[in-house]
Length: 387
Image (cartoon, rainbow, N blue to C red; front, side, top):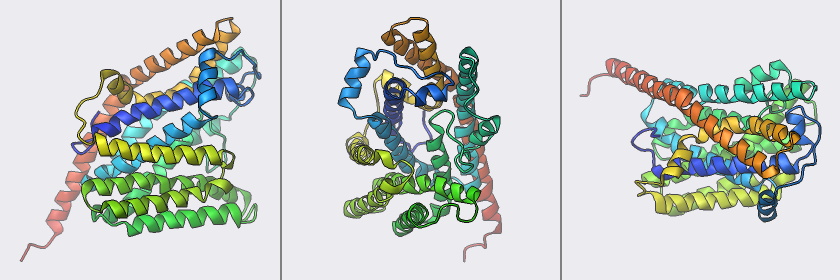
């Protein structure tokens, strides 16, 4: 569970909360209310199944995609808050190695399950695959959006943004170690400028369509990076590097930098719901930090969900869609299909957690520490002795 002694339990527990929100969004909103998009992603004909009562109750309370927005927003804030701890105690190369082993193996395992599920569904329904195999390779490297390829599993877009956030954090590492806000705000301003120019000023096809679509894809990253920095601001407040007033002003400016890009960005259709949900997630996260800093224990179910949150996030989508679809086609009631898909997603996530995530995470921490220690030793040998 731990990423180091500085990692706070409340942030770990929130991973489980965020994963449950995303799964609920996909299994409720995504499957039952998007009767053409969801089937197309799993190579199945459009459907119009009777919506289970529990799904109707949830959809009646939460606007479409609201649960997903809340879950993703919490994930982004957790990364913004937690990643600086690793930046502060690891060398750049050590951090990259540790992050690569933390993210890639588990995602690739979950992605393989998703691809296999879609292949099975395509053969079952005698329909062509909804993706090219080159897209599988590109998505495995988290660059599918730059080639303007549609997501295969519905979740990779957040990990593409995460990877770019890690690289940006390496550049900002000196500023974060010194507790400086100005470079963070400057980068957020650059994101706002980039997103505004590409979305609102740059003529379509500028520089060739491949370049134009790559730049257009990056506008979503530019939109979300300022929001992730809200977590980093809270990290600096937690360390005592900045005061509460400075943190509040900085967080407000970062939210504005994200919000101004939303109406003209790639997900403009969800502007109202998205902004409300991201604002609520920020307030909720700050409240959890305020009152959860001293947390030392959490209920076992929450800890279990937190432990399997990443593989659950990576594996649930397309496999769950295919399972529900096949069960419904065989006459199973909607509640049963939903229950079975949820249980299988949790079981599969636990299996990936034990077989892939835990060992590769341990290996990443070990290699990251060793590489960082080697860097410190190398610097010590070339540094002049103190006078």
